Length: 100
Length: 502
Image (cartoon, rainbow over all chains, first blue to last red; front, side):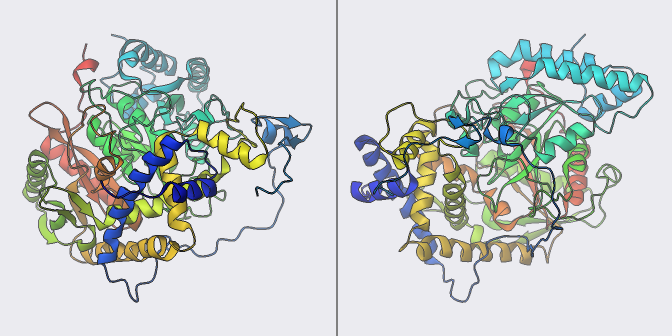
């Protein structure tokens, strides 16, 4: 329980994750993440030299479909849940800036 | 008596097909049960009463005019709320999707409906299927029908509680690390996670894409066979779903398997396991022995469960699973951006990144945030090799263990969870304690295998104990037949909590 991840590091991960965190959350998550990562370190006990990574348990090869048009969602259906729309477009605040 | 809860799904199906019970009466009986018992359970996020009654009337008209009503004709079912339906809401029990109306219906649900089933409602769950108790629901927890002070398990806790309390004839859940099997065990019902690729996931809200599977939650093994037969099979809309033929799982269900070799993974019987559950599993092994099966000692070294001097439990499989699942979750949940659908912050924002950050802070609960943060960390540069790639290598070792074990036996028999249903609030303070709920179920998802959870009796305190059968890929028929063998020989089947008998 003693380990923690520094608030700056948690802040960096939170930014990559696009989640705003309060100072209090930064501290709580810092402790919890450290505990969980310590648990993950158990894997270091295992020698995995020459072991191929396994991404999918059931081997699936390329699945190809005929290149023929099929019905898809109408613009109205695709936009039905949009928090804000403008005609056939999703509305967002200004995108130009230096925070990207 | 208007309550049809003494009928299994298969029996109710036959009664409706034979005309002794109308579909309208079946839906009405379950709506009445919901009115009576749902307030104490809280299994549903939404009950679709009106639509269900219309569907039932349509089924009855079909039958009266002599047209076929399908293999599930008139059966009222509950659907986990992470399966899209073009009617009602699909919330994933998250504030992020509290008002989301899906534009299409998941293939698995559409197949049930095409077979004549009626969707009664959408069931509660841990938010985005992340949890093992349904306490991470963004709305409210669900109670275990056997003891309202205890959790139903999770994440498909609403589906398991609904079947257990007879608030539906059967249900669908999803299982990423045990989310069908563990709640089934806690609630005394049957649940199956099929082979990775057996059931289409089109319309299942993605969590851990290399692990997720949809499966049935039912009163007994035959009902499980009935539902699996309806939802399994290839789907052009899901390229990870394999187009392999689907047999009729009911045809040979009653036929016992001869010369069955049942493997007991020795690593699963450590001191982390509750003694009463351990003895239930050994008793189940004796039942198989009495039916002519051979019991084989097998080893799954990389799914080993260690307990240190201070009683701290650890497992390679748990570490491996959570790295993989969180990495995939952080990527999958990037889509909740406050732009395309779902919650958007009402606060003032500086720019679009600020919009994302505030929206996601408000829309996601703590566990979802924790997993996104950890997954992002494990995938970030400098840590990718140490965590994510390492986990994928360990994943192969875990799968190799199963391949080796199945060289000596036809299926594995083991516990579902280390304990029976725990109390609400008991494990919410420390996330790691909750993750350890999955020590017996996660390896199955990592290896892509089918797993069947079925009741093995009740504890001394009257709580359901579950047992798990695990088989090689695409051995669902074998698991179901073996499960049925146990049910018949032990007489443990169709367990009903006291609340359903009043």
